[in-house]
Amino acid sequence: MATLNDVAKKANVSKMTVSRVINHPEQVTDELKQLVYQAMEELDYQPNIAARALASNRTQVIKVFIMEEMDTTEPYYMNLLTGIANELDKHAYSLQLVTRRNLQVGRCDGFIVCGMREEDYELIGKLDKPTVLFGENVHGYDYVDSKNQEGIETATEYGISLGYETLLYIGIDVDEPFELSREKGYINQMEAHGKEPMIYRFENHSRYSAKFIKENWGLFRKNTLFICSSDRLAIGIQRGLHEAGASMPDDYGIIGHDGIFLDQIAHPQLTTMKQFVMEMGAECARLVVKKIEKNGAPQGNIRYDTELIERETTRKKPEDSGRLKKHAKKRTRTK
Image (cartoon, rainbow, N blue to C red):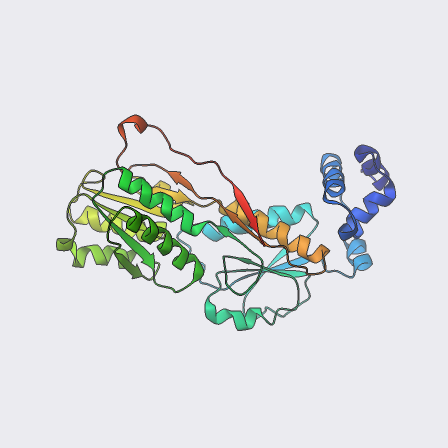
């Protein structure tokens, strides 16, 4: 088995430095930590977690609190949790998934909170450890999220470029920052092109958007594009159009948002704005570990670009035929 001395030699640092990285990472530069972590991984070195926790007065546990219903029809949260767990493992932390009932049961070093709504912030404010939110917010908490406004701006501009005359926005019926940002992206692009915004909101389940199409079929003229705030809603629109005998994508188009799983199993496959959920999960983990190392000091916000994935529910430009249009994945940090 590899020893502390082996790691020090591999990383070309002193044993004291390796020990400090393991037990007091807040005292070491990011460059040194990366060097030591890489050596530990290459040597498959397993530090004594119990000793480390004792020395630092920490638990080496991060609690992940998901405040909304975890729908079993898509692996959105599975991707997120995988990203969090894999990154925490690099820093010798374990993940504990908690609910409202056991939120305060047992000790931890920090929290990652997901799926929060406005009424949840009173509870979030009572958390007594470094906290990072998965999702933009206006309450001053560090967060990781997609660039919601910019993503829907891209989707809307793309739909207009394909020649769709009418573009409807199908939103999620919540007054939360992520949804308001997406709607703003749609409105901005519609107004920029002299088009009238038309927004409809539903609970985030496909049956509601499918019912909307069925009950209002006479309102939708040919050459209409539905821009949806989630792939779930987009699937419902698709089902409604199919049952109405509509032709897709020439007469009616659909663009979803998420790109986690539903977009690929839909028939025809769904054009969508892909979120990098696993990567954002890892970013949440890195951010909360850094906050712990910095004694809870604010670390800012990190937002990821979304990526337009062209599939079969939108027309193809002649020059783009058969090609997948991608945008470079970027992340942006803000204070």
